[in-house]
Amino acid sequence: MKLDIDIDDKYEETTIVIKTKEITKELEDMIKTIRTSPKKTLVGKSKEKLYIINPDEIYRMYGESQKVLTETENGIYELSHKLYELEEQFKDTSFVRVSKSAIVNFDKVKNMEMFFNGTMCVNFDNGKQEFISRRYVSKIKQYLGMGGK
Image (cartoon, rainbow, N blue to C red; front, side, top):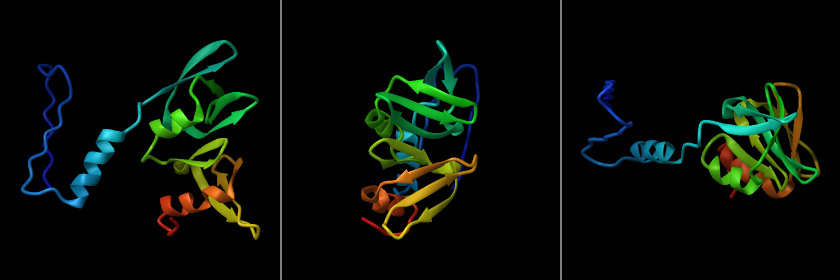
């Protein structure tokens, strides 16, 4: 595959052109990634101040006390989105719904533990944890390429 990048001030917006003999699975995956890539930032609130949050810094987004919060490398912030909106926004990324009240960034997961009762726990590289509801275990296994529905 050949990749050409042309950087010039004359361009008003970024345009991606694909020239190919045929559409392959690899090309379909790249197109899907480009089309579904989430916004680069979220806005979070903490102590009456607004902060720009880079999704790469997020460990998890979760509901608590009628609020949606996000835990990042720099602290915990309140978000104005609902969890289902965030789940949709970050669809087909490393952010995966793990329970009714949490979305986890699997790029920040150090390891996972499985328990005899069928539940799982993700351990983040910052030492914190989030439990995966049994009903979401197959979704997580699918994301990780371990089978499941």
